[in-house]
Image (cartoon, rainbow, N blue to C red):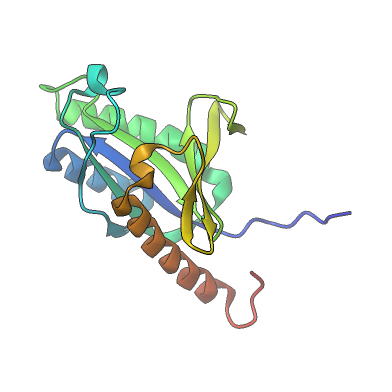
Length: 186
């Protein structure tokens, strides 16, 4: 029989999608108010992978990823998704002359094994976390680095995303070791 043990803390990150760098900066400021300092951010990447957001957000979007400088309890991911949904509403009020949804924030976390994204949408490859939120294992770590699944979004398979998430994983491993100390399990 297995013995249930508490989960290790994880490194929280967010994927941001917006029309311009001013909107990305506004999103980062709001997220820092909620989650603390941003440890790292990717360069913005033109979001040319799908037209899914065109009606709601317009065209010519930019994708950016940010990660935070403290570890996070993975049980809080559904609460975090609700918070980022509220943050999107706050940000829409800051940019009233653009599309109805100027900024999309997708929270997630990573640990040494996987990248998890939170979603309000159910699907065959997502598990229910609670409070109307689902979790998706978007990437998994193998000897060669982050490996996509058949359902992994195209932007999460780009060199920009993979390099950013690899650096975030290295940061995570250092922070975890600091927390666990010498001889810590993991």
